Length: 223
Image (cartoon, rainbow, N blue to C red; front, side):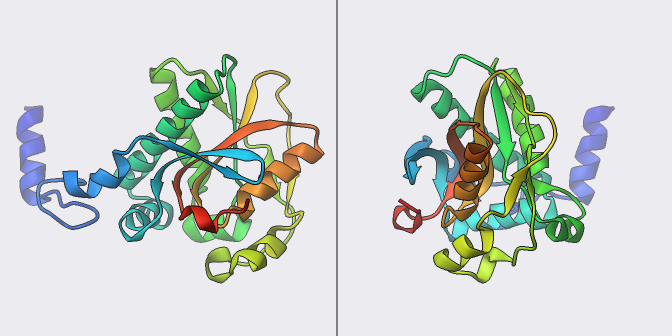
């Protein structure tokens, strides 16, 4: 009976690829290709950044569908990409303790506009996926935005750095055990991640690295 109902649903509401609209797929193999790469390591300042895909026209569609539309297929693709980045971090740095995943916070204005906290939702999906592969991790949302910040989408690198200078502070209880890592869905100039490292460092917390699903061309990142 369940199979009949699923078949009827797909007949009435056929699947289309969220990127290219090809019929019969939530996301087709071609559009999934950029998300099937091996994760890579780069640097932001003196910190390691682990990422899966380059940010380009194709991957940006998935990022935006997840962030702005809450598309479940896109969210699953990005969550899986983040898991691959974390697996590389764990293996490369030989991490044997539980992970405290500190999400880069969104401004309250952005959360109200979307009606949801996108990165926090991603992190919850990521921790569930990590549990399934026996990597102990927990969402540790100890950063919050402490001042009014502008929308970063139209700012250049220097403007983003100025916009986010001393923008984050710590909140809540700080875990006494485990390794701390920073997580964001996308790293463009690196300004948000760098501010996250700064805020944690000022609180005497050492983050061992940062993970993301997508990063822009290497020359765009802060070094």
